[in-house]
Image (cartoon, rainbow, N blue to C red; front, side):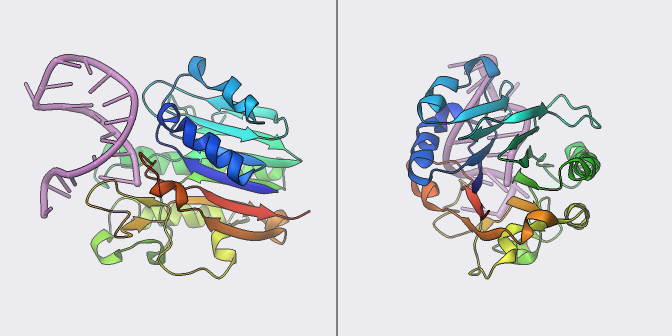
Length: 255
DNA sequence: ATGGCTTCATAGTGAAGA
């Protein structure tokens, strides 16, 4: 089972690339973040044509998440019941007997902003949400744009980023709390080359210089850890004309 | 190097992303 996550930074703009990627890689599940579209214009028909069901929680201008899957999703829920939020950042569904949680964690803007406090509260809500979800569904994958680079090896220039939003100690502590629920960063279950990232700034030749961060993740529950056989980042779409600033991240499960 | 790009928004002197 191939499971992937991709922050597309506008599904309206990126739909052709998403369809192309689905055709090439044939994932069983693809979680999308930053749709930036309302539900009424979600491209249901184009995706069905491509062989994918979709469940989604969009909104105007910002945010928005979706789960695409070859098999029909069941028990779809949007939002976190324990954390009321006007922003559409969470969607969960069961596919092939695995609970999929897809999130777009708040960016936080800067450590001294209100948005940073919202991010930390949100992550606390996510921890509680996942604790319950894991109790209900031992076989669980949580994926998405976490907007956290877990360690300095996930940062192109740790010195320059030190203390900054996306790498700050409280954010990393929140990340560690998520793992403590019984989740593993699938990427780090395997030997990986150094300097692999999932996001690069549009500005200042960020991608060409590999000035990136690894902030998009797929976490597998303890019950699935032994079944995870591969985890990687596909940089190819980042090289296309008019790319998202994020690359898709992928993990593969057997059985 | 506090900008550099891209998106959606509106028509800003923009806001937000990461």
